[in-house]
Image (cartoon, rainbow, N blue to C red; front, side, top):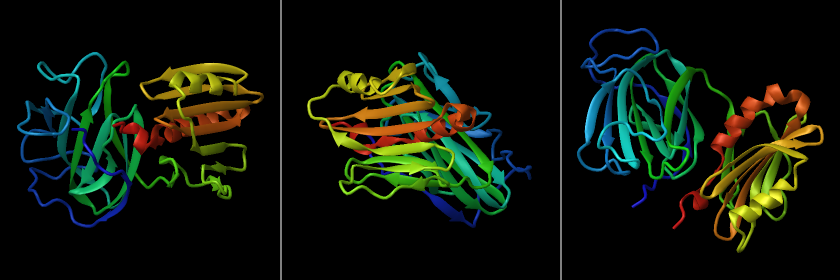
Amino acid sequence: MRPNRIFAFCLLVIQNAWAAPLLSAVADGQVAGETKCQWEAQYFTNIDLDGIPFLTRCESGPPNYSWKGTSPGPGIPGAFSARWTGIVTFAAGPTTFTSIASDGVVVWVDDRIVINDWIWQPITTDHGVAFLSSGAHKVIVEYFIEDPGDHGSMLKLSWKAGAKRFARYCNERFGSCVTYPSDLTPDPLPMNGDGRKFHDAKGFVMTVGGFNSLDRSISTEIKLDEEQFDDITYRAMGKNWFVLSGHKGLKVLYIKAFVGKGSTSLLWLEYPTSLKSRYDHIVKEISGSFRSGDIHNPG
């Protein structure tokens, strides 16, 4: 059975630290606990965190792994799940948590969800902000990988003091969602509800939406989108998604799409080539957050 959790992009206000006793006081960002484990890692031979862990071990920090062609340990299959638990001290105020994962990840702080993206998907970036009191807090990271495929399995968690300003748009008609910098201005909603366009004053344009594509294969969709480019500098493709990047006139053009049964969800980004260094990291953030729930969970 495929795990089924609802995505939430959360801003949390957390006032009370986890009540577990600590061995000693630690500086901001360091880890302390009842044992010598900085982080306790539990690995399961199923994708549901079900039953007794196959492997439990101490690890030196939050998960920062890319298992391409390998697994966390002998006897653990390519499809597995895992849970990491650590006690971390933070300064008072907002902290932004960032996960990069394929497939699903959930991040808890003091037993409250900060990041919840427990679905099958390619490598995806998620953010969550927790407003924390000064002191020690319990951080739990849960993860599953169902189909490593060619990209392998990946999970990386990091955090940074302060709150990045993000907004989230979801298209109700096709189910596509994206997290984007809140300084982008939305254009008026179209009458047909297919999607929405966002822009800034320097020429960055983001279009998110979808369209009906009955009986079209992913290869057909790729060929149609290739026609939008003057030249293509990057291509990638998975089981139900693809990415194309290149140039159109004096602009960088980036297209990411998820192709499902009867519909395609599309992310279209374009910006001046002269501002490539300014926007490339923003494109990575936006693209990493883009998904369409009904397509990510076929069947």
